[in-house]
Image 1 (tube, rainbow, N blue to C red):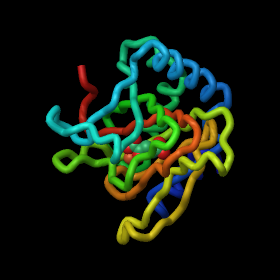
Image 2 (image 1 turned 45 degrees about the vertical axis):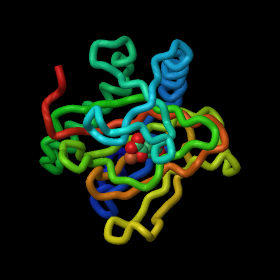
Image 3 (image 1 turned 135 degrees about the horizontal axis):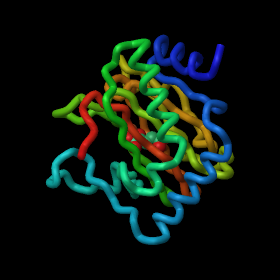
Image 4 (image 1 turned 180 degrees about the vertical axis):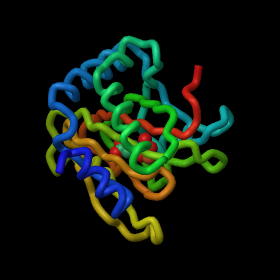
Length: 203
Ligand SMILES: O=C(O)CCC(=O)C(=O)O
Ligand SMILES: [Fe+2]
């Protein structure tokens, strides 16, 4: 069974999947360097919690700062995004999900920050179908916290799993199904977060 197969099986049976082997180790390091450089040069900002401009920034709900990766930017050339386009195509072939586009941003959670329990589909749009997080941390140990915490779709009070954000670890889950949270971290936490979408690419 190849790595993609394992992810597909887990997605099918439980709605989420984790892989520590599908992403080459060097990719998370080169992506971390890109993210770190963008942060150093002031390209990160705090995103609101909804879709409209009036949706307030709420660091008490969502503590990360982010930097979107635009299609024609140098960062978009990283092989990770071609890998992801291929993965998206495989998902479409197997499950007819109609995934037409993908979007990704770097995310940086400073010490003490997290993201409270939520679902990734916005109230008024269900175009986000599959959520993806690639962790970019070089070293992580249990004292650093910052786990991705997954909850039962039918009962969000029930925790299913805590996943430490180890470098090169890939988390994949159904955006409209799995409630999840980022627990407060005790060390700066880096990731690349994104969504496979059912609408056309922007621009
Ligand atoms: O970084 C993670 O583990 C999850 C992030 C998340 O839930 C989000 O950006 O919507
Ligand atoms: Fe999320």
